[in-house]
Length: 460
Image (cartoon, rainbow, N blue to C red; front, side, top):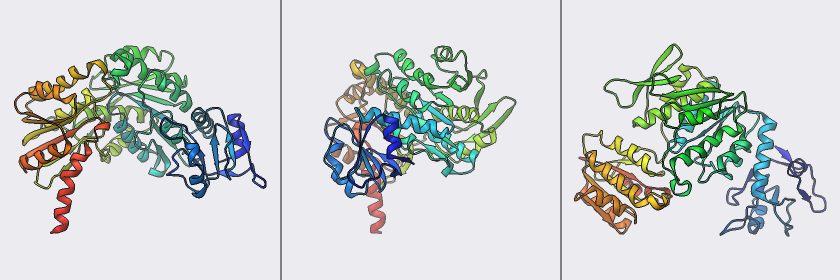
């Protein structure tokens, strides 16, 4: 990958070696998690609030690390490269490596669905370039100033394209990320209410998402949601660039039309062509994610046929509207990956389409600031107004949602009581949606229901 001397030169750092150690040692890859270190890697020692990577140098040495990136002199058997700030240095190293390889790059951001959109793009590009191993995509949601540089440092010469997800919780974060990644295609799928507690308004959220274009080359392509109320603003950030639009509006360059009687089938139109796509994942919001993925992929050179093939082969993201079965026969929709008011409503739109009795299990939503109570109440009202039969809830703020939902709602003060109620009060006649923000770990509810079934099957 890179020699220690090259890394030190790129970072303007000081290389410290013990007697007999070679500055031309080549590191095979880079990581900042001491538990994941592999032989030959460069370990980045990141200081944090609870842990300091510098304290784990003995462990990474034992695991075979080749060297460590540090902020101060340390006693270790490893060669070290000393820099002022290892977090910033990791970004600088990622920027150098990305520019060194010159791999074409698609960047994606948005309030809702960016991970799904990123995975859809990756599925399409795997068809386009002829193999999964030729496409590098952000793993999970490694989309911040630690995860994204680590993703870029996974780039290798055999990669034909990279698909990078960019997240944020404050203004300026995506600006920083996009200037490191320098994408050739940059896409925003939407701007909703996620992180409104930190940013204060949807307008500020739209501004933060629009930062993705700061690193887009002048000959790059901006991919923008034509149906968004912020379309004009985002387009204005790209007056000198090629803009590709997507949406359900016929005016969008890449636009969709629903297939009558089908909730997951739609046609994608681009220029004078159209093709029908049937998604394996439910929800009209996933059709919008698919249109964003289609536009970004076409901007990167994919054909409409490759778009259709990739989308139809996309199986979904763990914890995103995954359908499972509980021990008592109830259908379970696992949408526990994360939550905000917009994604809650999108999931409820999926739930209400089932012909079974509908049960909504809600956990608290985070990062909503002073509007938290009102936004939780809005979700409760939305569930009631859309015909959801029963609502269970866990967390402090969800009490407002239960109050808004009414008499068929019940709040629980422990996850154990919630699980017991679900096991006792649901059956094969029910469909149960489980959703909450990441910190609520609502997958515990899904696992309890589904693992009980697995245990019973083993017993048989």
